[in-house]
Length: 450
Image (cartoon, rainbow, N blue to C red; front, top):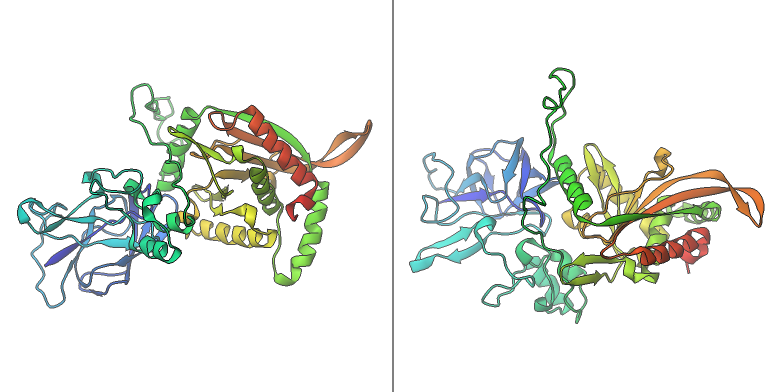
């Protein structure tokens, strides 16, 4: 019996990906757990393991193919010792529609991958697998209409070990599925977090305007080089356009004197030298932002149709530039971590981000973002909010500027920061209080270690 291997969903938001590389070919024997392919999403490259065992009967999607939709058959297996079936068009994923009765399944190494659900067809037919697009969305708690809780096997095992009630958790996976990240961040007895904002139906009023081609703007062919858009660039363009258009935002700008911070960094690095850890200015900024969010929790929030979600931890997303795009790996619960740990995690995350080796849970789900262009000499700028976060901080370069102290002209190292706020969540007064707390921590850095 042939088994179709389907294109997996390697993150909650993945709709399509690029089949970057095959590790198997026709005739190879595949065991459960073998890495058989590499899939490129808009943010990362991930290895994919086989769930079923058998012999590769056919590779249906060549490596290098872009835009492969989730749940599309990409290969076909046949049981060892069985004769290969005659070549035929790619079957429908539903039994009774010309396809096999049972479909194979794939899973990514990231536990957030959604698995097709096996159901029993009407009239006692054999089990069938319905693709995501044909399954009705489950309620926000990850429960089916029969009260069954949708959760990955790993999430169930971790929940059992921690004594968690899965019915009290909100799943962040596709269609409300509870995944590993949901149970790892939960505590026994914790209330279910507020659901994230749901996307609305696109109407004529909200649809993005048509982008004119260069030819329509009078620029002739041959007068430019065209670099094709990869998945990351398309996703960044779409998400930032939606954020800038749909989120009512405003900037708040403040100058900070950072001479004490720079002097403190020198002392901290001298103490950490034996550990091989070096703290950057950005690491200090992350720590200061996290403590300020603890002091002003109203700024650590997200807007949802049901209410304002106040986050329990400061999960700081730091912008990292890549070839062809941008990604924001996250320092989880940064308010609870020391500077050495933040520096170590930030260095590791940035390196794996540039290699596109991050797992989805390492760059999805932050509560506040920081974008630092100071190393490029940018004095001041404002960033676009990374939804559903309520704010993002833009950090400029530290430079010597004239300042007035006690009525006298002096010179200080000054850094300009701009906080872009979602006015539905962080109004002017809340943003100003957060910036005041952040300024106090930066200008008197002893507060970072108290």
